[in-house]
Each structure stands twice: as structure tokens, then as C-alpha cells.
Image 1: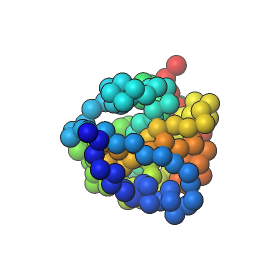
Image 2: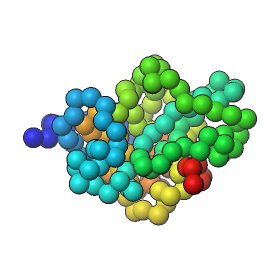
Image 3: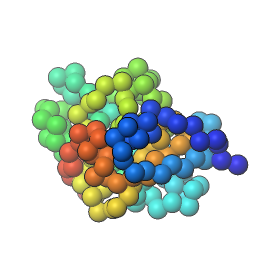
Image 4: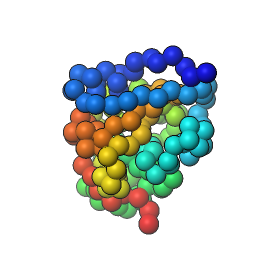
Length: 160
């Protein structure tokens, strides 16, 4: 049985900005990788995107939204945000930096609006799936609408 739909900050932000979106919930009590979630829900993993948080040499944080099946190319990502180099933040710091937990991290409604880059592949789809802001919750929306709300750019940032 699916969890009761609980409105998250991410959903409130979309509503406030008059963005069309759908939500989906599923039973899950702890982090499970995105590919397993897509399979569990009978979804195409190609339209499912994960949110990664990094830190640059400048100590600034950057957010990258990439397909769940892919890996972030650190060189491409660094170049996209104008940093000499970046690295992933430690998992233990996700909540402190974003306000979200692993598996529930979404680019919408973080503690601060970080510079965000969405992989260019998202533009191939009318709709993508991102985390809804908590484990067990997903948001389906246009990648162009997502970019508009979080002031994101589209770049090639995944490993070939």
C-alpha cells in the first residue's frame, strides 16, 4: 500500500510557482538506489534523475541533477560551474547542507538555492522524475520547468 501523500517543501515551491507536476509515493523506509526504485515502480530509469551535492575548491556548494543510471563527470561538472575542481560532499553532511536526507534529496527547496546544473539529457524528455523531498516520494515534471524554478542551467555533465 502506498504511503499517504505528504506535501513536501519541494511540492509547495512548485505550487507557489504554478508549475504542473504529479507526485507518486511508494513504500520505503530507508535509502534504496534510484535504479531499484525505478524497477520497483515500473518506471523507465532513463527519465529518473538523482540529485548530487558537491563542494568546490572555493568551498561553495553545487548541485547536479543527472540520470540515475549515470555517473557525474567531475571534470565536466567543475567546468560547468567554473571551479578548478569539485568533490562529492560526505553523505553525513547531506542533511546539514541541504535539509534533506540521502534518498530524499531534491534540487527544490534546499536550505539555500545553490548553483545547479541539470544534465543536458533531461531536455530530451517532456517529463522527468526527481525525488519529492523525502524517501518514498517522487515528483514528475518538465525539466524546463524545474530549471526555471531553481535557476538551473543545462550542461553535458555525465561520464561518456
